[in-house]
Length: 126
Image (cartoon, rainbow, N blue to C red; front, top):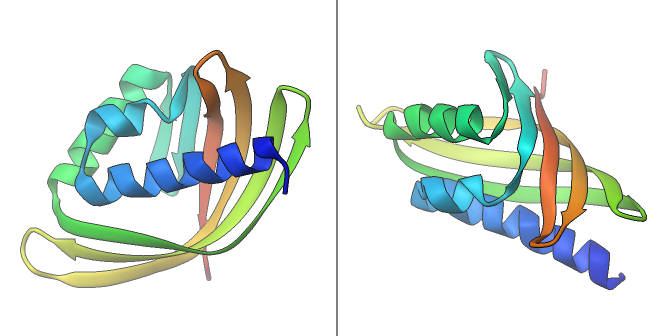
C-alpha cells in the first residue's frame, strides 16, 4: 500500500471518528469546498450544505458507530476513487436502535491539506 492509499484510509478513519463524536468541524474538514454528499434522501453540494445537513442529522442521534467491512482505492495522480462496504449501528435520541449496511462510492482530491472527499455517495444494501 502506498502513502496516498494510507492517507485516504486515514481520511476514512477521520470521517468515521467525526460521525461517532458528532464533531461538525472535523466532519467538515473531510471535504473539499465544492464536495457533494448523496444517498437516499440526501443531496448536498458545497461544504456549508454538507456541514449543515450533518449537524441536523447528527442532532437526532445519540450515538453512531461505523465499521468498514472492506474497501478499495484507485489513485490517479491528484484524484482517486474508492468504494467501501460499511456497517453502522445507530441509537436515536429516543433510544431506538437500528443498523444500516451499505456501500460508499467516493471520489477524492488531493489538496494542500491532504486528501479530501470530492464526492461521497451512500448506497444502502437491499
